[in-house]
Image (tube, rainbow, N blue to C red; front, side, top):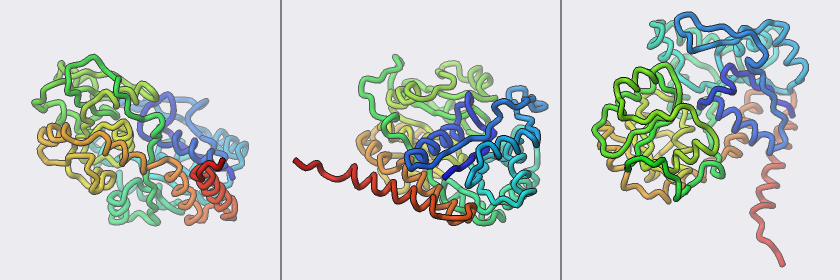
Length: 360
């Protein structure tokens, strides 16, 4: 089976969307699914007016049609609502090809905060974009419920996973900073509410990993904070493992990816008691969620790191990939479910073989 994923967010960007899609692809390939990406690579780029830090692709119809024809996918999934996503949506609509979409971020709130675009207008665009597909995948139950209330059709649950081999405890990991170390990871933008974390009176050191439009302003306002820029892979895993608490100050974020990565590295969570965070954590004793973020940070220092690791190991990318395939089957975007069923059965056989005790 061949699945084509269209996305405006792609390498060299380092963000939750890119990490989610690359991790999904690796897991799907382990299930015997061939995955291709239609990204801005090779397309003309332009800066967004009023936002020189953001560059977007300007795809042509011929580029889109050629890339899709060359890959010849059995299913098409559109991951983002940018120019690439719009162009692939247009291609599919004109040819009456079904597709699925996914909802990764809070673009309506972001557009309102950065460009003063009315949220009602942005949500209207998002409904128009996603309701053209056969199903929209949401990372959490609360997000799915919200999308349903806002008029989105055919919402499907697609939880994230974590690579527990890459993101793992490293007892010797050190950043050479005064402890305890309070860490946050993600795009450094106003909608992430990072200032609420940096303003806290906490002993030790605050660390921010990520890039974004609010970085320079926050660095000026909070000169004692350590900004490490964008990191990924082994270096990011080392930073997670070296921290004492992962602080998640966002009240609106839809992705639980960074939470799972931190927990896989045995680092507990502190955050606000909002639905998106509770969706990931549930009742597990791996986080402190409190309206007083300072209280949450200090109490999180007492959490068992072993409990954090054990919880994260139950959330795998292979499980996430099987859920993704099941969603595609339910949405009916391929003419036959046989390739999907074969992939799921093959994965189940591989798991049973791995789990079987050695004889002899």
